[in-house]
Amino acid sequence: MTDDRAASPDNNARHHTAVVGLQWGDEGKGKIVDLLTGRHDVIVRYNGGANAGHTIVVGDQRYALHLIPSGILYPDKVCVIGNGVVVDPEVLIEEIETLRARGVEVGANLRISDRAHVVMPYHKVHDAALEAVLASKASDDADLSIGTTKRGIGPAYADKVHRSTALRMGDLSDETRLRSKLRVICSIRSVELAALGVQAPPLDPDALAKQYAAFGRTLLPHITDTTYLLHDCLREGRSILFEGANACLLDIDHGTYPYVTSSNSSVLGVPAGTGVPGRNIDYVLGIMKAYTTRVGEGPFPTEQDNAIGERIRERGHEYGTTTNRPRRCGWLDLVAVRYSAMICGTTSLACMLLDVLSGFDELKLCTHYRLKDGSISDRFIPDAHRLSQIEAIYETLPGWSEEIDDATDRASLPANAQSYLKRIEEIVGVPIEIVSVGPERTQTVVEV
Ligand code: IMP
Image (cartoon, rainbow, N blue to C red; front, side, top):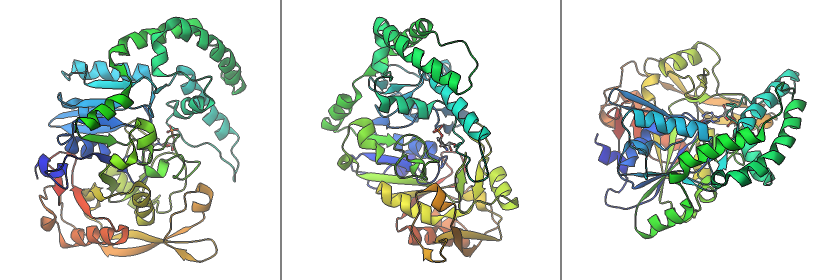
């Protein structure tokens, strides 16, 4: 495999690509975005915040990024944090400094939307406090906690929708105005936090204004109107890669609500989160694991809370990049993947972590759901309560015993691994173009 082959279904085309996770996150988008970056000029994040985590392995170097697109590892690419992202300036500055300390250039190649919303410390406190209150009030039929990453994502997006109490990156450049706004916001927030049981002195708006204005000065060279920047890029014929964070089943509108994140984390988030109309996206690569994982609460029809799940977790190193929480693991839910592929307009699939399944005698693919009334359906249910009531119906396929981490093309995979992939393609109705058999860039099988 060469990086070039991975880059495009049509090596001659200048195109715009979206990369999106088709499950509940952590599908390995970082590796694929990294593979595709060589073929694109501009890499754009359009949603989410520091709740996301990409791990990219380059040689013996491992980079864990939360906010900055992984394209930053290439000096000639422009990386954009779009207006749909919620930015924690403290995390962002730390990420910039860590990259610089490791010799990665972060300058004019990083652009941040002046309209991206700011995650403030009180958002993080609110996120954790609300989760704790909800968990403490849990009863058998009503635990309303979500298992968030506690990165302040929900409260920051809630402020965006409230409007008057929100702060955007562009607001950080005017300390006087920032202070005035924060005086009002903090007076309200202090009361709200106290009501949630937070025992802390009232928020200090002047100190916060000083600290966040300083962050604003540090980030000022990067802050711009990224919508015009992206449209300029389109006009100049530069190709754009839209990098989704979180994943389709965590989408606020189309995921397993309420166990979702607070942004449009499917491809549908691209237009709103960047200002680029969806019709500009020619190629949508849906990333899926060869099995399913989920972090946090919420229904998971194919979960294997047993030795099978444990084996997948250990072989797949299924622990969160952001929170280090053990991920829940289970068989591949193709009802869910087919739904996500539909929502995202997926043109091809990347099947990640196939090597983790080596050594199972047999493998199960969930193809249908049995509903509460006994009927059988091949449709996903993007509602947590109703989804928790279904039973997964499986097709059983033979496994393979061989290790496959040095496979170079699909034909060199064991016959049963090839059949597993073929069955996924048949059921989802979308071709698999990339198969990942290990963390390294070279451990990638590409079929175009
Ligand atoms: P929040 O985004 O921190 O509000 O968390 C809401 C839900 O989305 C929780 O179940 C999180 O575990 C989950 N979540 C958010 N971002 C990611 C991600 O990047 N990967 C996996 N799960 C995520």
